[in-house]
Amino acid sequence: MTDRAEIQSRILAEIEPYNKKGVAITDATTFAGDLEWDSLTVMDFVAAIEDAFDITITMNMQAEIETVGQLIDAVQKLQG
Amino acid sequence: MTEAAETAHDSTTPAEVEGAKDLFSKFDPLIAERQALLDTGVRDPFAIVMDEVKSPTLAVIKGKETILLGTYNYMGMTFDPDVILAGKEALDQFGSGTNGSRMLNGTFRDHIDAEEALKEFYGAAHAMVFSTGYQANLGIISTLAGKGDYIVLDADSHASIYDGCALGNAEIVRFRHNSVEDLDKRLGRLPADAQKLVVLEGVYSMMGDVAPLKEMVAVSKKHGAMVLVDEAHSMGFFGPNGRGVYEDQGLEGDVDFVIGTFSKSVGTVGGFCVSNHPKFEIMRFVCRPYIFTASLPPSVVATAATSIRKLMHADNKRAHLWENSRRLHGGLKDMGFKLGTDTPQSAIIAVILEDQTQAVAIWQALLEAGLYVNMARPPATPAGMFLLRCSLCAEHSTEQIDTILELFHAAGKATGAI
Image (cartoon, rainbow over all chains, first blue to last red; front, side, top):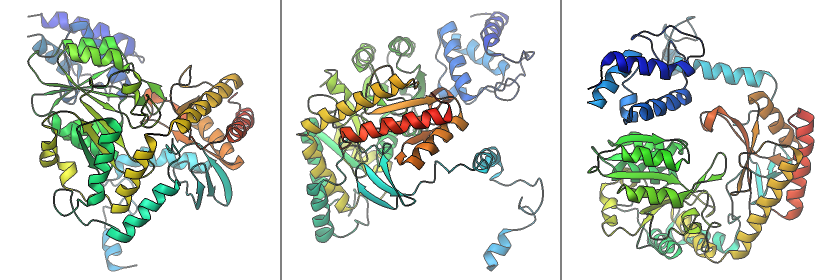
């Protein structure tokens, strides 16, 4: 199992190119609200995360993930 | 004011109390955006009325004779005399409607005949006619893939495919538009023993680009997935028999399900799925968008059956449609318009514009000059683009294409698009 802190730092690195407004990221940061990502940005970002961790984040799961913290937890779980 | 209308306006109605919310409040940003656009004095691109339709390529809009270049009437079958006669005869013999589901009292002689015509057209063992193409995707996709199964779809898929996914209980995975490598990777990450359905389109309707089906079907088969291809925008003019992009790319026998529509090349309304799967007929008993809706009127299925059989032999029309596509694409490209594809890949040619203001300005200039094209905007378009979508017809004459090019040149110059 991968360490949560390591997953967190890799996810933060993936968020960086899409964080156009330089929002400070915490576990509570929301993708739609705080980062103001539209559906196209979300799609590109999810594909990048899937490729970075070699996992599948289905659209069904995406509907449940609203914050950075939830994404980190989901990736950790998917990596098993 | 009636009593009902009076009671509808109670104290929580936003019209009466500033800042109050109701179920419509979530649409306020869209209402404001539309109002701002219309306040600039432009005509509403989504409120066009054809007062007269003179032919597959000519209509009267607000008293002006207008060339139609945005109708999906690719093969120009809507005014075919044999098609119209078949519809009239069915209307006389069977009446105006069926009043029922295909499952119960809503299957007439011509529903079966339309399915026979589809089997002949596709060389397929089974054909199932739905009331619209939207319902065909909705029904087949939501029913085929159930709980624990996976649907893998192109990110730029049509709304009816996404809605089919949303209606069912399968796990949904998207891949980057037309990327064989991305599809391969995503299929490779799924559990090996899970059932998988890959959903593709022959022609993607916004940009008019064609899918690399040959490679995508090979990758899908490698991972043990079944393949469904929506050929809505290719029927009639791709492949030796006009079956679609899958036929054009030599994939006869490799595609499990073909979805299509009567509302484009066939020239009426309706949807269908054809398949050679030995158990396919069970779909009639489990597919809710097939069962719980009224079947098509007899005149509609009669026109569809006649049109489909004529499309099997429409080689000259096919050839002229491709000539039109090449002529329009080449002409627009030479003028400096930015197009959705580098080469004429289909009967759809998308002109890419900078923003909504420019798109509406050139759209209106064209309309006032006597040319109708589709304006397309997000969320229908990929990557948030504003497009003028031209869809060609086999009945457009070469002279009409030249007129269309002149009108585009004038409108493009007048609005600064070229």
